[in-house]
Figure 1 (cartoon, rainbow, N blue to C red):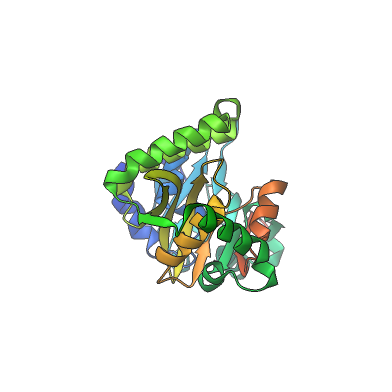
Figure 2: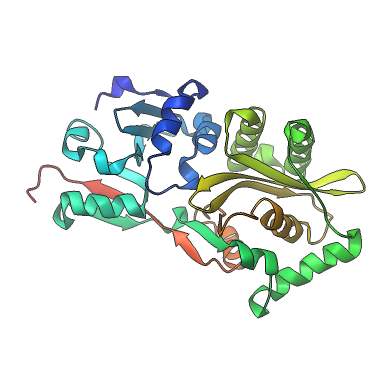
Length: 300
């Protein structure tokens, strides 16, 4: 695999990407075009297209490139040929691809490490909507406090005309949380602004917002991942509105998630506070991911 063939992830590759995305057996929120293009500058993400696959590599912070899992029809790939002069170590490898590599190469040629911080949290839509039982008592209580204070949630689906309001809320959120002093929050803010400013470039995007007295106080942006799963890229609420996160979470599940069985709410990146928050919503499962090293030299 020639390094010279890689180029920065760009919207010019939209059609080539989606042709391979549609054939990918397991869709991860990580690997949507909105995500890899949104974070392209922060991670220095580059890609290369072959007949059946889109290869992705991360060049920042460096100095050595790091390879993500390829996107495309894994069953049609000639792995020995594809990897002959290319990477042998991959991060963020979805479980389905790891298992396919296990079959293709055998356990003796694979070294697999669980990457818990990259696992994507999956929730049943019906549970996020109902918030029933003791498991969701605290969430239901906070939602009820929001309703008591501000009335029935004024939920509105996002459209092109509302993007400006979303970006204004994001700017307010960032000022409150001092994004300029946090490289990760600053990078996320850049990704949100980048993606939402090109809203129509990503056909699967959808979103919802909450208003109080005519002011947007929360928004959520998701994407149809196929196979009955809705991914959630971003979710933000303004400070000072108690229960606002529980409200936008539930209303987004109610309206945007109406025709989906599962909501994918991304990973926790090994951040303890984020892990506790995601676990508090009682995930039904995970999209597990791994670090995989392949040794082509060793005999099967």
